[in-house]
Length: 280
Image (cartoon, rainbow, N blue to C red; front, top):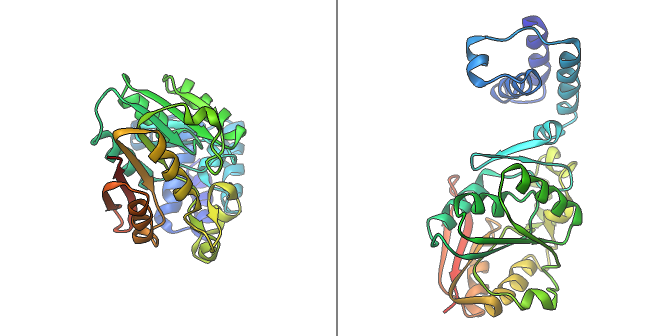
């Protein structure tokens, strides 16, 4: 078994950084053998069955084609929770965890929250898990994403209301609601930035959830902010995850629309990544 695992890890090392290859191999073994981190560290597990070994080999083959590990496993960790993921939704990112943390440290324990752009449901489900007295809703244009998110809400034992709606053309029913907090991580990567991205993102993650035109990259921010200005309660807060290259432009947009106390925050990598703004 050790020799098999070593050969598979060496195959990954030809395609990934050595530490990344080691981490991937560990995750695959733990996942398919259903063992804990302690069992891995103490080597307290039996040899894999032929089926388990075949699953690991197939996963390595998919990794060598740049398929994201999370899609292979069908799940991803986010804010101490586990979410099912499919190619219909983006893989949750660490930067988004920082956005969730900012919200949790900024709001009361009993608020009405709307997340726009559900995806896997990682934002609204994490917020509901840590703010159980709050009413949390989420909307997405993709019905496939909503189904994934509903499954994740059930998986994590929370009650979130999901709406099928369009952030570029909100329906009348969405204007009948009011919120203390609106949060969104909308598409924000300009087409021109594709050259900076890895194949595992470009070839596998949903393009609709990633990219905007070079000509109007803030289109989602503008429409969501206009909606927020009409539906946020007085003193309500709007949170965005943003394009690191367009922080000042996004701040200027929110200022123009009448928001106050606009704060631009960097992520742990030092990039402009989040904005909080308040409605007077």
